[in-house]
Image (cartoon, rainbow, N blue to C red; front, side):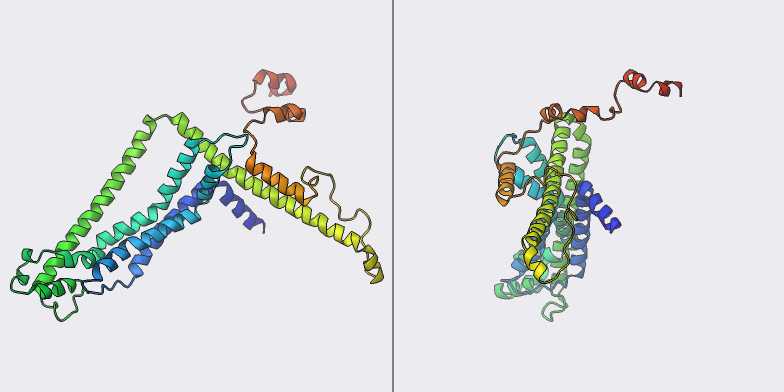
Length: 334
């Protein structure tokens, strides 16, 4: 049980690394899905283009939506964008940073799918074989227009008797395959160049703004997780109190049935904390409503002033060495 708890805590504290791993798995899944796909073009003039373009672009849309669903930050970004102003102002730079991070991760698997389909060439041959100019190929010179459309539609199906031994079919297939592979390599080259420029030109921009946006985006995510954990803890305590109150109210009935009662105070938790002080459903609803509509500002200096015990903690690593030696003179002799 402790191992699963450690793994869960690792996933919570390293959500960015986990999302990178999920994006990589989606990319590998897209390649595996395409290689295992039984691609069979209908070889009909009215269906070839719809089928070819559908295979090329519909699965990337599905993979893109899966990337958005699996990314926890997409929900965090929407909540931050839609939440009321309250006592905490919204930073557009943080929302833009979250949006760009989400889109970059969600676009990995769709781009991999499109590049793989273009390098393979089957989808493009199926989609655009009927749109080719027959005058560019010798085998269609003495054929009527309807027969030309039938022959061009049968180009992806090399086992058809109508085009099995037709040299023009091979020429059309090779022509479209070359264009498909050229387009796939071009897209891949453009993406690599864009990633290279983004990597090397990034230090030229204002790094302070980027660090601030990244810090507060991580803060929003962690704050939401801690709030959910705190709500779960209060729900457990509230349910425990409700159950104890139920059995306390049923004391007479339990005595009639000769059940053994626990001693007074047994099972009670020590200490009345802040969460245990909230003992009413209306109070809980008011607390959640206040958190949503009037989120507190990011300033805990007043809380430190109200709680002087916080100032008596151990000194920070960068604290003045002189004060440390004055408190612990024996350390100076080490």
